[in-house]
Length: 416
Ligand code: UD1
Image (cartoon, rainbow, N blue to C red; front, side, top):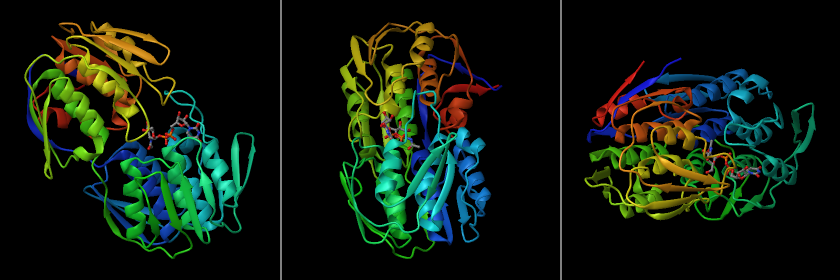
């Protein structure tokens, strides 16, 4: 099992290029099915979930090939509709294959995704919406058996603006006859990226980024070449690394418009952040200040995926910050590990109160989940001494090369 070794307590100084967005590329890979053609995705990150999506596509009869960071997928040969239980367990977000499989070949079979480290991850909204579009879905023995002779566009109202459900329904609606309107849709930038990708393939979708998305279905899609957006959570992580360790960094290719709530919080804490079309620069020279409260919420609110890394940066701030986690139940698992490093954090239900301490000290800690693991790196960079982080396979799920990136930013980090 690999580990990360980080020597903390030295300011960062350097620049790195931000990888493509995992949460954008995963639904996009499922969407390639709709084209029945060859699609080139540029800036595609090399991550295990991407490899798992490729394995699903290959099991379904498609082929894929890498050239640097460009992934070419050929979905002409698709002739299967079952996603293996093994791959479903590996990657919870594989449920996003449901919509495109139903739209392209009228059938899909996959196992019910279980919970994950963040707590239960239901897909009831996906299933209900697909049924309204005309799919017949049966659940038996932990499997979902889905059939759709003919999907027909309709009005769909989501009770929660779920990212996954919005994507799945957009994808299914591309294959439905007539117009589908999704209300209370999720507004995340990754959904705008998916709309832009699909429209480049010939789809007719409007409204992504707002709460109402309109899809005119039934159009014949074709292949395209598309550049995936930069990863806003990786961006947030490296900004927090600079906030924690101090110094001056530049994140090339990052887009501040995608993470305005995070940069606003870091500015309030005392970071100096400037952004232009080339990327984001962040300078932190003084001890951070606590910023009263951070409440996670669906976009454009504060992202749940950035909660852990911002918390890690604020462990050494002056003052108190109160976090409220409103999206997932089990998202404070990193707190115990931060406390091993000397942080003062008290959790009660969905609230975590961080009282800044003067110093953190290096320790042996364990990643508990993807963003929680990244938070430990952030804390370690600002801690006195050496931190050894284990279970880093969690971190690898979302960061293509965290060791290389942080080294480029001036950190002392080694992968053992
Ligand atoms: C996506 C992101 C994840 C991020 C999350 C919230 C991907 C691959 N993952 O996950 O990194 O943390 O958005 O920004 O893009 N819910 C239901 N029923 C459903 C679907 C969701 O009750 O059918 C609930 C969930 O339990 C959760 C909330 O809605 O409490 C938000 O979930 P959702 O937006 O669907 O997150 P994901 O798409 O799973």
